[in-house]
Length: 257
Ligand SMILES: Nc1ncnc2c1ncn2[C@@H]1O[C@H](COP(=O)(O)OP(=O)(O)OP(=O)(O)O)[C@@H](O)[C@H]1O
Ligand SMILES: [Mg+2]
Image (cartoon, rainbow, N blue to C red; front, side, top):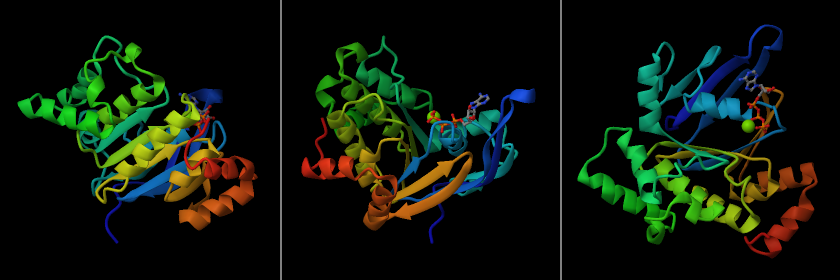
């Protein structure tokens, strides 16, 4: 078995203070493997974003540990952690998080800039990343000149331009219509085919199930169930009574309205 890309081990996370404190994660273990798209599903408030943030070293566990790139992050200071994050993780968010005053190319290139990579190669890498998401022709457009789906594809280019080993996406299709959501998920699934990369997608939408190699369910801060592959996905469909949506998705072979 190869080493997971990133791994949370028995993580407990307390959030908030005093009487308002909540145990957002109650002893969660989850490993992201290379070459796999893992879908994390669960009700609102179940701890999905908290777990994604822990795996991406944006939050540190209250108890338990995280291993990234084969090393434990325990006792690692904030600067070193930021460096690990820059080297190993690309993030994609529901609301794109692009800088409105920068072109698509500059938004992507910024991710290399913060890694200290402002070489001539950075421009070529930026072009490559935009070509992967099918937006080479929109390099000089500003975010407001792009559709939601295009903006999210720029955000994906930004997430992958530095060749991270983990891509973590928090509800990346929630602001998109079905067709654009499919385009974004197709891209993320393609990105996950690289054996040296693991992709985690947090989502509510059962239409996303068919893009997943593995589905992990979280409820109230604990992982309650996990399924793998096509059969697993069918089991989830049956379980959650979303057959209607799925039959529809299958009929249209990928294009949702
Ligand atoms: N900064 C914070 N301070 C206190 N409690 C928090 C904080 N952030 C999140 N929580 C709580 O932690 C729990 C888990 O939150 P989290 O954001 O991980 O849920 P989620 O599964 O991502 O939900 P959603 O689907 O609504 O995005 C919730 O009970 C939430 O209210
Ligand atoms: Mg969330």
